Image (cartoon, rainbow, N blue to C red):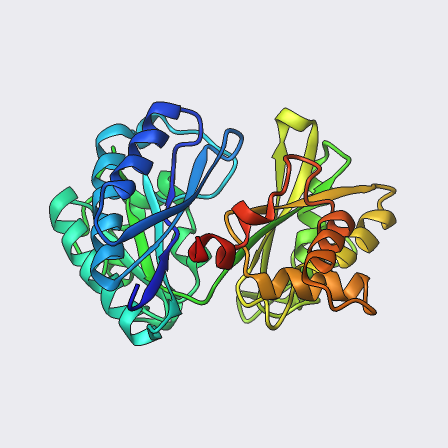
Length: 340
C-alpha cells in the first residue's frame, strides 16, 4: 500500500455472530482494505474491528461496515458493560505509514459527513479532529451514554459536528476522529467486587478520582469537584465486571504507549490490588498492539535480552496475556499482520 491508515471501529454488538460476520465481510469486500482483527466481547456487548488500507480504502471500509451495522443493531435493545453512545459507537482513524495526522483528520470529517447524511445520525469529532476542547476526550462526549443522548442533544453546546441534533432511537450517535495508536489493555482481578476495580482505576488513570472528606462526601471548590491526580499520564481506566470468568477487570486505554506502557500499569494495578487483599490474574490486549510496545514490556522483565522472540514471550508470560485466551503474536502484533 502506498500509505497505510488504520481504522478501529467499535460496534455495540458482541453477541450476535451473524451481525459480527456481516460487518467483517463488508470490510473484506472493500477494495484497498485489509481486515486484521475482529474481537467481540459478550459482557461488554461490543466488537472491536481492526483494518488497514489506503485513504480511500479505509474511508469506504468504514462506511460500508457502518451501513451494515446500522441495519442490524438496535440500541433500544442494547445492554452491555462498556460505555457507549450508539450502535456505531466510535470510529477512529490512525496514521501508520506514509500518512499524517492531517490526512486522518480529513478522512474522519469525510466519514462523519457521509455517515450522518446516509444514516440520519448525529456525529461528533474527537481527539485531533475535535472542533471544541470539551470534545477532545471520548469519555466527555460519551457522558450520559445512549440513555442520556436524547436530553444531551437539546443542549446547544452538544449539537453534533455533523447531522441534525435529533435523537435516533435505533442508532444513537457516532464519534469519529484521528488519534494516536491506542492500546486497549485490561488487567484481571480475582474478585467479583467491581468497586475494587473502580477504585484502582481511579488511582492509576490520569484524571484521578474525586477527593472525599472524612464523611465520604465529594469535596467541591467553587462548585467544581476537587480531584486527586492519578499515577499515570495518557491513561484512561474504569472498573468492569467479567461475569463469564467470575472476575473483574481494570479496563484501561493506553492513549500513548510511548508515555505509559502496559508493564507500568500492570505492576501498579498489582500493587494496588494487594492492598485490598486481591490478586491479579494476568491481563489481555483487546485488538492489536504495536511490536515496540510488546518489546518494551519484555525488556522491562528481561533487561539482558535483545532477542525479539524471547522478549515477546517474556512479555506474554509476565503480563499473563494468555490467561483469558491464547495470545498469538502473529495475530495480535500489527506489524506482523501488515507484513503478511
